[in-house]
Image 1 (cartoon, rainbow, N blue to C red):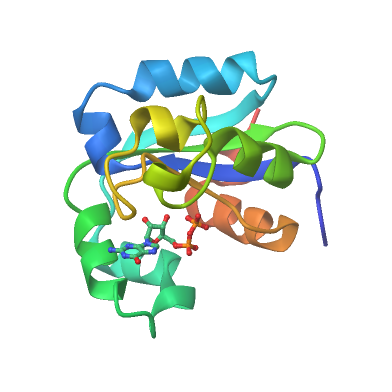
Image 2 (cartoon, rainbow, N blue to C red; image 1 turned 90 degrees about the vertical axis):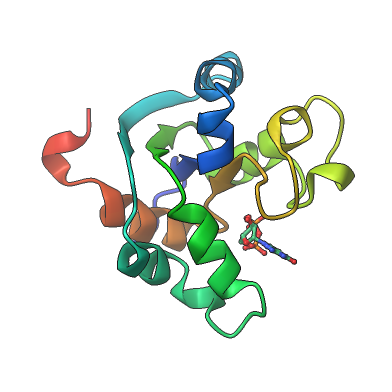
Length: 140
Ligand code: GDP
């Protein structure tokens, strides 16, 4: 089943460490997203491998898993019309150096790997990734 109104984000470890939770959530808020669910947590290696399983053949997979388990993240389900597309526009390109001025990754990203935030890439993945982090009881 496809829901066009939600996306799953993570504020990645370096952005959390640098104190960017507040500024990033302010951008999310200003862009008109509603926070359906949210939590701060530290992923285990197995959880990070599972979340990024789609990338397991990519050369950066092990580095990505190590980075994503290096400290706490903030995971959230965001709601807005066409949430996946709208959020990817707000966050900008994967590589912060190539992201448009004013986007979250341009403002708060450090490198192509430590690019401040995750955003689902399709409606189907938004549903799968939301279920990875949150039960029905944790959604409002
Ligand atoms: P996204 O959908 O924009 O997040 O990009 P991808 O799905 O292609 O990649 C997933 C994540 O892997 C990115 O957000 C980065 O954290 C990381 N990543 C992507 N490309 C590279 C790369 O070339 N090198 C490294 N080290 N990490 C990468």
